[in-house]
Structures are given as C-alpha cells and as structure tokens.
Amino acid sequence: MQIANSNYCREVETYLCRKNDGHLIRVVGPSFEIVSSWAQKGVPLKVAFAGIDRYFERYYRKGARRRPVKIDFCQADVLDVFDEWRRATGITNVGREDTSAVAVGGEDAAAVARTDEVRPTVSLPAHLERVVLRLSSARARGTIDERFDDLIDQVSSELDRATSEGRGLRGPARQALIERLTVLDGDLVKRARSTLNDSERLTFEHEADEELEPFRDRMTADAFAVAFERSVGRLVRERFGLPTISFV
Image 1 (cartoon, helix red, strand yellow):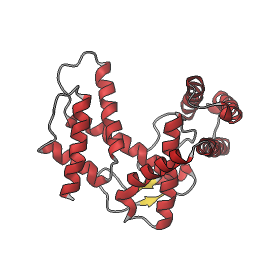
Image 2 (cartoon, rainbow, N blue to C red):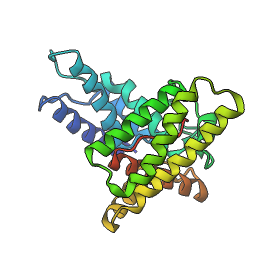
Image 3 (cartoon, rainbow, N blue to C red):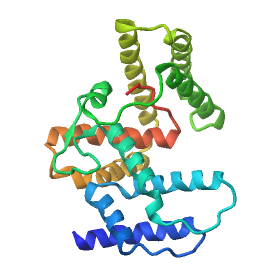
Image 4 (cartoon, one colour):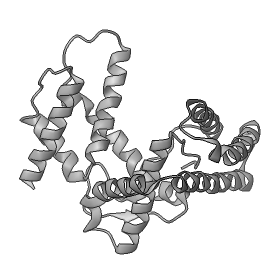
C-alpha cells in the first residue's frame, strides 16, 4: 500500500507542479499524509486532478497569484469532487472518514441520494434552469450533432415547462417530475453512448474499470456491474458536455 500511495502522491505532485507553472511544491510530510488518504479512500487520480483544478479556478478569480499553491489547500475541493463522483457512480457507504464498506444504490438515481450522506444544495427550479442552459450550450458548441436534435428538443421542451411550473409543484406532482427527469437523463446518456465508435467505447470502459478498481474487492459482482455502467455513463456525459438531468 505504501508503494501504491507513493506512486499516487508522485502523480499528484507532478500535476500540482504543472498547475503552479513549473514551481515544485513537494508532497511530503503532512501533505503526503493528506494525499495518501485520498488514495486510501479510492479517490481516482482524475477526480483528484479535477478537485485541484477547482481550487485553482477559484484562486485565479481572486486576481494575480502571490505564491504557489500547496496541495493542502486543495483538500476540501478534492473531497467535494469525490463526493460528486460517488453520487454519479452510485457508490455509497464510503464516507470521508470511512472506507470499510461499499454499496451501490439501486437503478433509480433518487435511491442514491437517500443512501448517500451528500444532499443536493440547489432547488429543483434552479436545477432545471441550469440543465436547459447546459443543453443549449452543448448544442451551440457543437459537442452534440444532429443525431441528438429530436431528443434535445424533447428534453428542452419538457424542462421549459417544468421550470415554469416547478415552484408550485408539491407532493406526488413533484415526485412525478423527478422520476420523469431520471428517465430523460437515461435516454440522453443512452443516445450519447450509441454514437461512440469502438475505440471510444473501449477507452471509456477501461477508464471506468480503473476508477472503480479500489472498490472492486468490497463489492458484489452485481454492485460492481451497476457502478461500472454508471461510471461509463459519467465519462460519456463528460465527453459530450451533457448535464445531469436527474435531480438527485
């Protein structure tokens, strides 16, 4: 485990060096312990890098940098991105301090939210507005082509109506909308996956397998299969710049 952690820390240190414009900030001592804890929790390197990116983006918004960033400053952002990754893949019972047990939520995305300690922090109407914006942006950027048009039009129309009604939805009507959004989300990812060529599909499957490797020994075959499909779906969504339509 020590060797694995050392390799993990070296990768993080190299990435941090690039983000710091070549200025080397060593990952040693307490910093090594922080990054090692990420490896022990099963934080994929790509997820750790995304957390570091998130900190740097916020840092740059403050104006000109005054000093290189230490990895310690990125801890909260890395764990936040890891929480988001776990919700996307459906992996539960892996908290920030506990890696002893792993489970995977059911097929309904809402089940993940009920069993995960992480809860959504935005309202349903705000979520719908963001989804419509990201779908429009993906179409404008050309990350999705005409093969998506009919589904995008359907989703956008559904979300436009839901946004106008969302603030007044309560009880069964609200739950029905959430369930409909989950179905639309699945349709969107399925359409995206159907456009992949064999090389892209194998690349995503390999990456998903690598991301989930730290959890494999603590998961049943069925649980791993569910997490694997969700992980591939997350990577496909990222590839096309698609939003998560489900409200989880």
